[in-house]
Image (cartoon, rainbow, N blue to C red; front, side, top):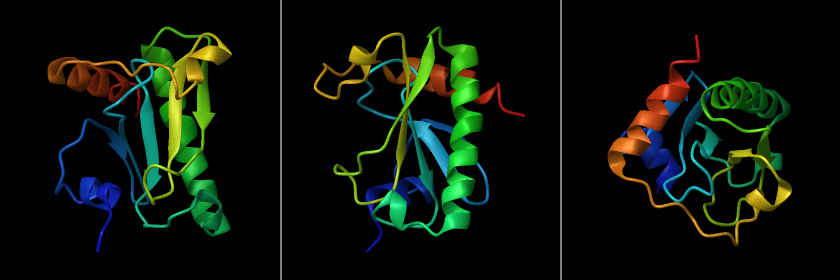
Length: 131
């Protein structure tokens, strides 16, 4: 049975899509730590990031880099933090989070509550920086 991220990729569950290619998909986290907090996932359903074969892992990291650069162009921040945890959803994924300090990347911090319109606006704005 497909997991939640596979259902998002297939369009069965709505999301705020930032971008996709043949192998990867990026969408906003619905419980973001910061505006622009984006999840990058392989389209292949693999539970743990480091179980991806080398080619898929490299493809995912290259895609994540493109997304991170686009986020930084749109969201004012010093850096884009990259976090891999993988406990909450059994599908490999990378969190890309715009941050100005290390403390902003703590998952114990309160999550933002953004309106649907603002989420869509953020996703579209980040996506426009991708060519």
